[in-house]
Image 1 (spheres, helix red, strand yellow):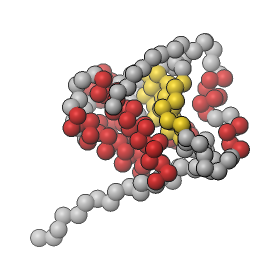
Image 2 (image 1 turned 30 degrees about the horizontal axis):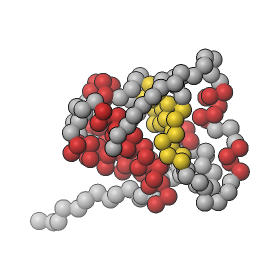
Image 3 (image 1 turned 45 degrees about the vertical axis):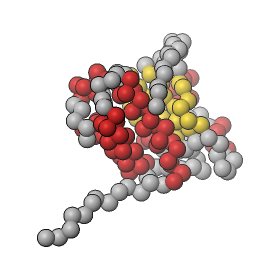
Image 4 (image 1 turned 45 degrees about the horizontal axis):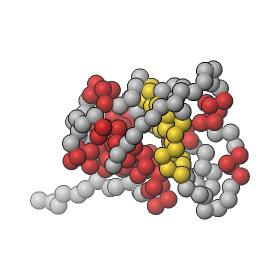
Length: 167
């Protein structure tokens, strides 16, 4: 009888930890507010989402150019569930219909080096969940990001949403 081996864990780059933790905490908080998911399930979901994001981002994380790869790191629910979220939710037995009931139908979550932000609704305000100062000053902050391009391309004024997430 051979010993049971655990699958290798994705490389968790230390510089990604605060950003991934902010994203996981936010999505877990959305699930928590509905009261349909137990704390134990939230812990499992959070761990699965953390590992999935670390794996997904490991070759697409550029602290020296924070906006490079921003579209790849974007988590999106637009009447279609983001596959990373649905995969993590499947670990706790949540089906797609249940996820659609628990999460906003329109959600964009940007996970970039030094900043995590979200928008609920197509015309919602962009809110910052996590922000840090770059260790090396970069010129990329003056660049037009995907997020800023979306804001500039609006045809209607933004609507303000208030969301409270407890941890």
